[in-house]
Length: 190
Image (tube, rainbow, N blue to C red):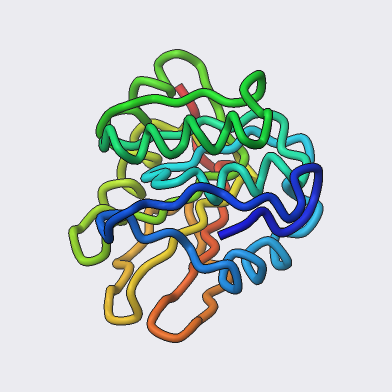
């Protein structure tokens, strides 16, 4: 697992010693970032279920301004911290331990807003729906932002709240990556 391009290009990231963490494959990650393109530059990024920090650090390497990593696992957070240090990205990164749904609420109440949120949760556990609902109730994802979801091919995303639109889905073997656009233009904010 490596950083594909940008300021940390080619850097090999630390990976887990067991199979509790399922990092996004390099070919999938490269395709995802080819789709995102230069939209990542200067953005605030949220890496939910961070695992190794792979997606957040690729965002940082490609020009994202600040990355917030969330995970519940001590082992994953250790990997994320080590990989941040390896990239020399400490000043642009924040690492938070906890339940992603609860952290979205907390970040929203702290006034934090994000342009991209990567959601690569454990498959088949109902996390995707919970994350989408959390962003609907606590709009920490900016208007014009994207929720990028990685899921198993047999997992289904249900009906989306009115402020979200599935704009693209790509299949990579047994994995699907969905790009969900946040359109809060017609939503009255609090």
